[in-house]
Image (cartoon, rainbow, N blue to C red; front, side, top):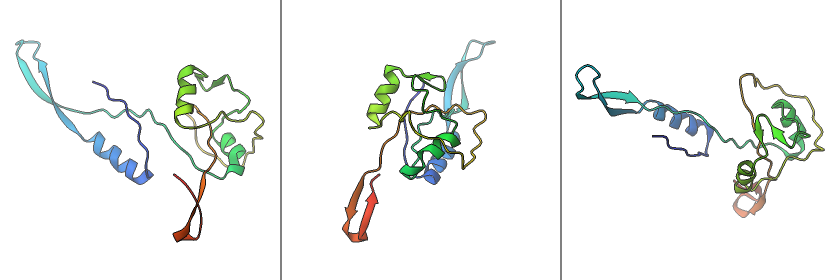
Amino acid sequence: MHLYFMTRGIKQNRDLFVKFMETQMFNWKTKDLKTGKDVWQTVQGALRPVELWEYVFPEESLGEVLEMLKINPKNQEKYGNLSQSLQLKTLRKMLNAEPIPEDTELKQTHFVFVNGMGIHPIGIKKDEFKDVKEWNRGQEML
């Protein structure tokens, strides 16, 4: 059985959640091929990451982040190996995101190791600010 779900939260809590999920054991009924009888054995659940990430940074740094992750904003028809399909557009809509502007100027200032990674951008979303009186300042809303 496969259960698909998305998570969102503090990175440290997410990491703890992952550790717990990776250690869960279950009883599994199988057949002994020699005797044909049912036998029970213990198996470990397999947590396979298909992760959706939200990275928050200053709006003015979009070009730096795109370059850091090796994302070409001019390639609107295909991000990585994931084409601009209806599914991707639907996911972007669900996240209230917009396509990455093609005219974003890339700027190399940071390095992140991305070898062996498939990074498939979905879109961007501008910050929403709200006055929070008890803090006496504007706060970006989660």
